[in-house]
Length: 584
Image 1 (tube, rainbow, N blue to C red):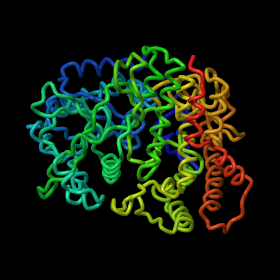
Image 2: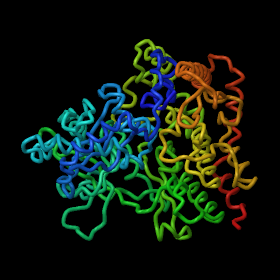
Image 3: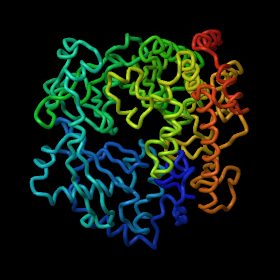
């Protein structure tokens, strides 16, 4: 099976257990397939695009979602509107030949950092230029749109003049904003401490928009002043307000992002001001993920690996003492370096980012967390009503306080956040779960690799890099670190006999153990579906046991996992081991 946008739902996420659609056969295309048979399209595309004005930029996006951070050049240095462009792969019309010319198979395998140079991105930029040039007074139309409006691509065509777009004004984001009074009341923070830290949205000047929820901005009149991160969610804004509450309430720590610089106020429908987002300090250094991936950086010494690890453990220990006491999205791309020269490893320190507490990819979450997340995901978002009802009934049974609106509760009712899996853990269980992700981050640091994903993980198609090593293989770590990582990640399926249902085999996906063999897309899908059904059975068994008021017996799987969870060390013990490591 070739990687496409469909692999997330059909292979990677638990929806695969209920997948019924027969996969489309592979068309056999490969990256860079422009050849004699389709060169007529590429020549035509170039000739018809030559006269199109270059008036749009694409700052970033996500290839698997068909999402693009598109910015017309006239929007630079003006207040950010976050108007993004979307291409629904299952609804957008395009020919097989065009998919070859635009290298869509390569596009689906490209990470966020590679998106700028792809043929589809360049083609889209030109098509937007032609489309907007045909709309009278487009600049004034654009600048009058509600914050968070969208552009949809309805059809792809080799001739950019034939592509179809829809500009859809959307007021839903602005309608979801809270006023300062409403926010202060919800989170029990004195309004006097908030009213003095506001800036009007109109005072911001857009520098770049590389991420759906993040823009880099400056404040008008501060030409030589610093740039800031403007964080504003494009959906589920209650997560943004929960993060804002935590950042304002948490005591400072040298390895945790500092409190917001300002609240950004913008008019809502009805003309009353709402909190559109907040400004954060811009850390110029790379993320830990980038630091471990990009070869241009100096080699990280053992001394630095130990130092960074100790600082991260210190930050996690501090978070445990603050409400609500957990950091579920702990991974290398949520750690950024600051201080000194980013090329001088002795002068920089790691800082934790992103406190929405929404959750993380399953590879970083311990089994006791991701089992609950599987069930809640299906209960809320499965396309099949029978599946939704099945898992809603199970969650109501084991979590009597759970409802379908659990993730949309008022802030005052979500003191522990909106993450059911983490909020349901007691203090000791949270500490054990936190150490699990720490173990995987330590593995990345000491093995000098950016991710646990390796050459056989299907998830690696969604990453920004390729690596030939995957968790839990050790090459660089001393024995004491290997033992520490193994203890921290006790319960990880990688330590046992259970393997994923499917694997990456170069540029395709095959059933696990069938690398190098001829297999059909149907066989690959069947392997994924079978594995996910087994995985959900394990999840249901564990959740019923742990939260079912002892009404269910204990299976061997549950008993073993509970024992392994208890074997994980405390953060204090991890720190002591790190302090004892030789650094030369």
